[in-house]
Length: 124
Image (cartoon, rainbow, N blue to C red; front, side):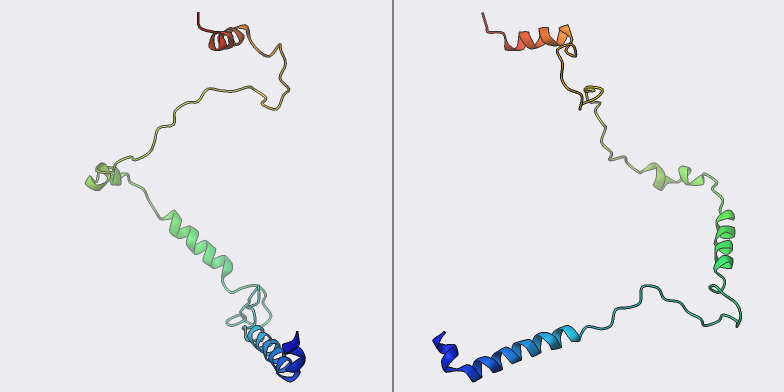
């Protein structure tokens, strides 16, 4: 605190430089691009909508309709050398039908209780 009171002018200039630097850094960002952009180039006067939007879609659909799948890819040597690196899914035991239902004594079967008794039974 004593340094601030002795060097008030230097402290004020330092604060002004910091505030000016922050303001300059934040104002240098470019203006954000508009979320929706439209182009009016090529649209005749008096019409609305984008030029050829429906025509482009129809052209793509016609191109896709012309594609034929003959099945010859399955006879290619490259296809026959492919290997399956998938893992097999081991079936897990199914739990309760409703895991959020409260536990009741009637819910436990006699085989489960006998099995639990065998697990925790002391050795003879």
